[in-house]
Structures are given as structure tokens and as C-alpha cells.
Length: 356
Image (tube, rainbow, N blue to C red; front, side):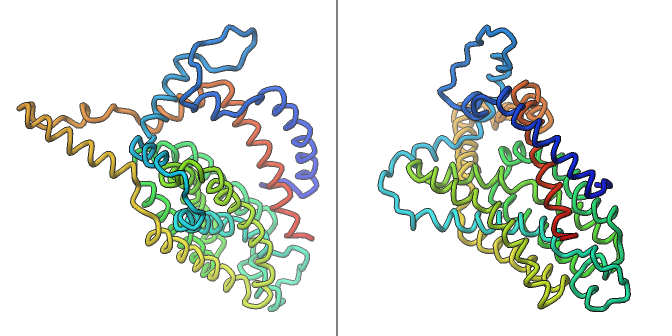
């Protein structure tokens, strides 16, 4: 984050060379097909130098994946073959708008700074450029645009999937959208650099929960024959949000950077409200509640008493989930490849608009 723009260009060139090599050499098939598919053959293969996970690693990861899958939802998904697109829109559109808000909130800062104008007393520049108004330099902006957001975002993302497996994904989606919208409001009203920095850290924490909850909600709520379409619509949120971030320049010229941030935050609150009203309850939580009631009723009928918490649910923790997944060599290479990919993207996104 403290590198100069030219150093970022050099790092970008190195990443462009290394990423295809890593992709071709170590990611010949998709991760989901290897470790998550219910039809995956779990017998270990004796391949010299293979990066395939061991049988025990696959068993642990697959068992947790299958526990998180709503069995009742699978029956519902296979019961309808004629679901219209209009029927899935109340589920997909709110999630899409939340995803767009996520990307728009995090990336808008790239287009609301200007380092080409060095006149600190220029009122017009202060109206449209955050750095001119609050007063921070390129190094401080680099911290805001990258590590202040990504440090906590990256760590939280490792555990977000495990939390989505355990808790209500609808609440996680709505709650996280409200939190990053609040962080955007705080940014809009900030008068000191430290306030903007704290808001970016909070935003990084909240934004990590979007995709893990969104994709799995689509899996459980959308019929199978429309799942691919629903996922493609939802996945477009990253590009729509990125496009709106660049178009923030138009808003910036009319209502200033503070007004633009307020508008983005209001959009996030609206997306969260629509999701809360439109999306059904998390089917996983409803299924768990039903199973718990059945277990208690059966226990009482057999005079066994209510089951303990340890008996009702196998004890696992988000930390053990993360370590199990990251212990698989192929996942480690995917992790490294994603790191290089996003470093390359940030090199361009963070600095191009700020100077050009």
C-alpha cells in the first residue's frame, strides 16, 4: 500500500507472468468438483507428485459441506421442473443488490480522490476529492484503499463460510449490508483521516460475509433447474458494483464526494431492507429447528430427557474448519493464485483513477 504507482506497475507485470503458470500447473480442475461434489470418489489416488488431497482431508471437508446442505431443500429443488424466471427474482434480485452495494461501497474511494491537483486551498477540489478535503497523502490513501480494508476482510473471509454454515444466512446478509452502509455513512461525515481509516476497517469486516451467504442461500432456495441462471445473475454483482464505482465520478461532480458516499450508503440500506422483506427465512435454520424439536420429542417419549448440546450437534469450530480446508495442497495453490490475481487488480484499480 506504500508502493509508488511505478512500483505497482512492476509488481503487476510479475503477477501477470506468474498467475497463468500457477493456474495451468496446479489448478487443472475446479475445487468444487474435487472436494465438494457428493459424487466425488474419495479413494486416494497414488499419483507421483500429486496435489490431490488425502482421503481423510476430503472426508472432513465433505462431511461439513454435506451437514450444511439443506436436505429438505434438496427435495424441494427436485420437485419442480417448470419454475419460471419470475419466481426466482424475489430471491436473486435482493441478493444481487446487496452484492452490488458491497462492491460499490468498497471501490468508490478509488474515484473520490485526486492527486493531480496539489492546491490544498482549492475549494472546488475539496468538494470533489476526499484527500483534498480531509488532507492525506498518497501513502495514507494507499493504506485506506488496500490494507485497511483487505487485512480484516481477508482474515474474516476465512471464517465467514463456517459462520454461514452455523448461523442464519439471511440475518448475516442483511446485518453485514447494514454495517458496511453504516461505515460508508461514517466515511461521508469524517473530518479526520483516522475516522476514515476506522470506517474502512469496519467495512472490511462486514463485506466478507456477502458471497458465502448469498451463494448458499441461492443453492437452498432456488430450484435446481434455475440454479445456474440464479448464480450467474448474482455473480454479475461484482461487475455491476465495479461499474457503478467508476460512474461515481458523475455523482461526485454534482453532489461532491460526501454526497456521493451518502448516496451509496443509502443504496446499501435499501438493498438490506429489500432482502429482509423479500427473502424467505433461512431453510437451514428452519430445518434445524424442526430436527431439534423432533429429537426432544423422541427423547421425552423414551424417557431419555432432553439431549445435551454436545449430543445434539457435533462440536466443530470455525478455526478447525479453516485449518482443515487450508491443509489441502490444492486449496493452498488456489489461495496463492487468488492472492496474485487480486494484487494485480488492485494495482490498477487503486491508482489509475487517482492519477488519470
